Image (cartoon, rainbow over all chains, first blue to last red):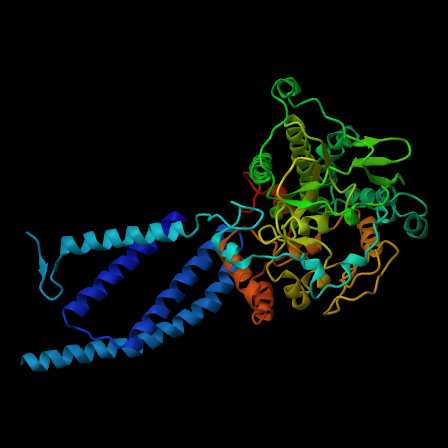
Length: 102
Length: 461
């Protein structure tokens, strides 16, 4: 169990440093709702991982499976929303930057 | 040579270093959230921070609050009225035989037919797990000292003179050390003591005696024995999930034996400290109301105690004493309200002995019910009749209760939310079913328990 937490922590750290790097480099500018969506995405992802691993540890594979289906579905929807909102923003920003440089 | 990312201003080494530190910090924080905090309720040092948030101390015991009513009107109960001892039930349903004797044909038939969960090894587990409780004729529950405590030392030093607060702490430390899952202390309310024991002996609180005394006419408890230590003993859910089989009943037997061990050790501890002590199992007083008085939970639809940590999967032992101990306050965490919506125990009761009405009522179901209180009465006669026909006891109501879960953050979060609002109770119950919790013998095959390799499964506690 501790390894899962450590791994999740490590990935979170890498992601956080990456976001910081891109913001600092001016590659992307987040608005408040991007942050909100990002936080919801992160928390729902953590919830799914936590629920599934805990359910297995508890000896409840059905709970783990159903949680993947229900909460994993919610996580997937939030992920799609995040992708649709944040990714084009990043592309546009890059594109604008490239145009400005040219 | 270090490759530098000009945009972020971080070298690759710096990047991985930062990520590693952040990861470690997040990992430690994540693990740290699982570490037990010190809660305020009676079961101190046993609950999580989330459960601590769920629990509210109260001056009025929950059985005196809505949806219940009229607890103060209940008369002292005669132990011989209980279904297990009731002569009317015995004559009416069991041909004049004690229920355990009447049960034997079903026990033998199912063992002979090798019905999974009722085979000879299952039946033997079911009976021998009771060894500490029943062994030696219940000797561990003696009102006399067992001669284990060092009384010579006591004579030398005199009785312990700790303050009531200090004694509260000491008793709980000792209780957990002895194997209790939770412990609390209540001031004695004579209303909850049986008027007579199962053999018809009156139980009398009296100033005429310095020590607990049993004569041929009555059982006398000195009035200064005014504190009752309530000890909750966890039952093994990984075994109880085979209820209502003999294998599942092993969980009940283990619980009873642990009750005897914890209560008798506690009584000997108190005697060794220079005070009187009476260890009790299910005898001498009603267990559920004293446990509620001691801040250990609320009463559920099934008439049993629901503890925030152990749910319904527990047994209650008690020790009466004259040691000065500060009593704990009753607690509430929304369990009775949850019961109004849930009904899982009623739906999963094979004998339909648990009320399905949304709200409690004054209606009783059998002569073993103590009338006068608005609550969910349980038909203990039809319940016991099922035990006899089934060839084993049943605890479906305890294992399917949504509060009876292994100790994990998921269940603590649900308990935390349901303690503060009833808005999500229906959703939680639907999810409880969808996620496959609270399964019984119908879905769990006892043969797997016997055939699986390695140690038997245990619930995380």
